[in-house]
Length: 224
Image (cartoon, rainbow, N blue to C red; front, side):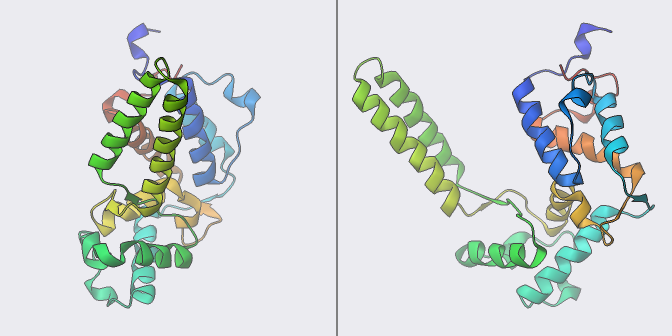
């Protein structure tokens, strides 16, 4: 196999973390022995489809996720479901002042974590610079360096807790995100799946997480 088939800028630890997310989304579990022989994206897709023990039904999961999300928005936020479309901006239903509160209401109703809120980019950049500077201080004054690292890490934790910036912009984009991260729970009947969606969905998952061009995610693309 050609060496240029190897996907770039991905290490094994990143893939391990993503595999955990895939297990959660499809409610499956990988054994170490099964993963040891996986080297390509195509082999991983085959393994996921092999592990899913559900009835194959030809229906769109993203569409079902949208209907569930629309129902949740209508009931918990008291918004007319007729006004909720895929291109409706989330800022309309999640205004900045009430964003965290409303997001939590949706999560409780849906029974899943949406993971759509984050700190502003400038704050993350500032904390990153502070962390880098603190690491440098370790060579000058260990106490100051360690204190700086601890304070910066606390800053990252707090920023994640209070962040209100949206990671996706529309209701439709949120429905797609829910489908990627909670595939089985997105289905109207959680005992079914659509086999024809799996490869495209895994392609989306890898593309979103690693910033990859989807054209690079061929069956022959090497993960390791």
